[in-house]
Figure: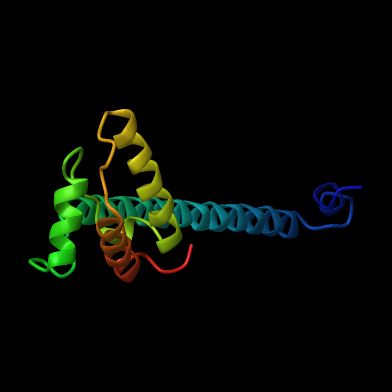
Length: 135
């Protein structure tokens, strides 16, 4: 037997029944208000996160150690085919894979001796030193 029907049973006052149903409506409204506030807060946080990502992505970061020989080697060699990426884009392991893949791509495009051993070492050392830490 449901509580509402029990409250309407003989011997239960009408005032008690009204008070119960009003309390139920108030609880439902309170839950609705809480859900609405939560949705608004999560929507605001999503918008704020998107705005921050958009704003930081639009700001071009300068390369670490501008004007240094290692930076020049990296920018001049990798800049032949594309704009050089900031070292924080990959981890040190990621950069080793990227450099190997770019050398393979360069060879396929006819640039057989794209990097000599010294240039490769210089570029990998520079990228490793300034790479993203972690995963």
